[in-house]
View 1 (cartoon, rainbow, N blue to C red):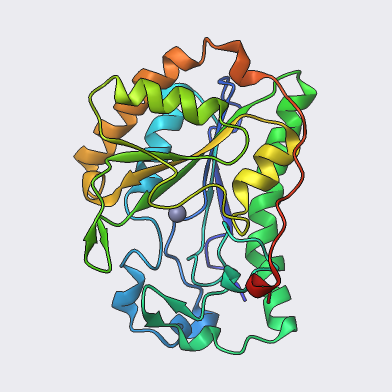
View 2: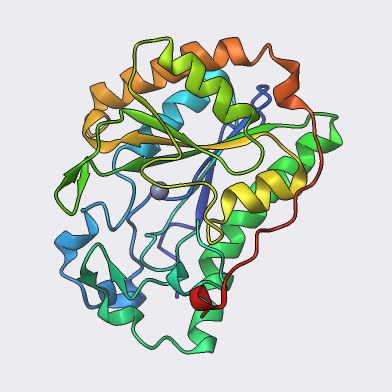
Length: 269
Ligand SMILES: [Zn+2]
């Protein structure tokens, strides 16, 4: 599925960073391996938000550097297999994305699904798990920042928030960040335009709550970070608040391990 000359399924930035924050970026890349023949889509579709989270890779790299934190970025388009969907969920390999049918994802057979998970999804997530395990072995319970971006409007409905924090049951990090970013005069959302309570979401539940770690999804509006200048400015803003939060010991202790939320039958493959 992946040619020898093609990029691997993940990139680790600053692997031995000394911060107790750990960054992940599920939708960093819109890379589509040759083998997939663009899933039958026009190539221009890949540069839209359905292919990846516009702007967020640059913010993540900039923030990792400023915090001296490790970051793990995915290296493939979410249309191949979505790193932030539980593999048993139907939306893991989307047949339609924002009203665009994805022909190459129609009627996926179990062997094909398994091959995509084995080639892309698991190597990326296993790397995150290893980074967390190596920090735990050093006595550090990292706080997880899962970096994403959202399109400024969907179905004609504008989204006013500049940034939002998604969380489920462990709200430590989300509450602290929402308060700190609001204090900077920003329009900050809480579990909008998506919700961390969605049972199909993978990262928060797999790496954060199941391990008792503080965790939040940080969503930034794409029109604010789709230029180099914008991405750098947001890395600065997030750094200025996270530098303060780094002093809060409550964010860096492992608490009760929370079970996966139930996934309704309707959402399963
Ligand atoms: Zn995303």
